[in-house]
Length: 200
Image 1: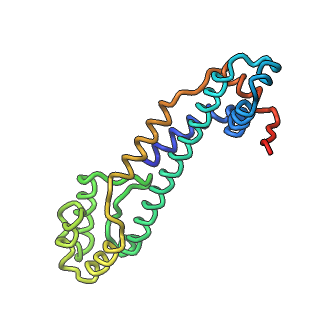
Image 2: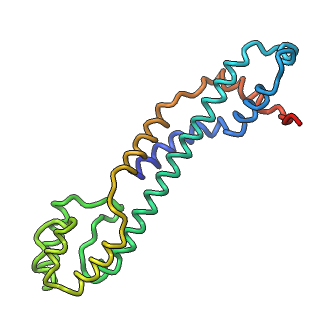
Image 3: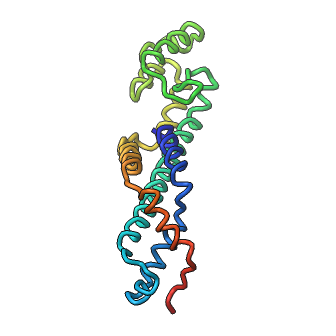
C-alpha cells in the first residue's frame, strides 16, 4: 500500500507542480480581502468562480499531504517490524519478505521453511507458514529462539487494517478530487502573484 501511495503521489505531483499551494492561497486571501467596489474597479466579475478554483487547488494539496503522512507512518511501522526480527533472521529464521521488500505469499514462505528444515536441524518442526501463535508451536523445540520471538512479539503493535484502509481511502480521495482547468488556473495564478497585505 505504501508503494501504491508513492506511485500515485508521483503522478499527482507532476500535475500539481505547476499549481503551487502558495499561489492558490495568496489568490484566495487577496480576493477575499477585496470590497465590492474594489472588485468593480479591478474588473473582476466572477470572484466566486476564482475562489472555488483556488480552494480546489488547496484541497488537492491538502489531500496529497494526508497521503504522504499516512504513507510515511506505515513505512516507519514496517521498518520497525523488520528491525525487530533482524536478529532472528541473522540466526537462520527465513525472512518474511523478498528482495523488493514485498511480503512473501504463504506457499512461498512454506517452501523456505522446508529448505530451512533441511539445512538446519533446529527447524525440523517448521512445516507451516509463520503466522501468529503458529510460530510458537513450531519453534517450541528450540527454546532459545522461542524466547526471543515471544519478547519481540510482545513489543510489536497489534496488527490493524484500519491504518491501511485510511491510506487507501486517502489515495482514492486524492486521485478523484477535481482540479481547475488550465484557463481557470490562469485566473487563480493572476491574483496569486498579487501581493496580499493583511488588514490591520
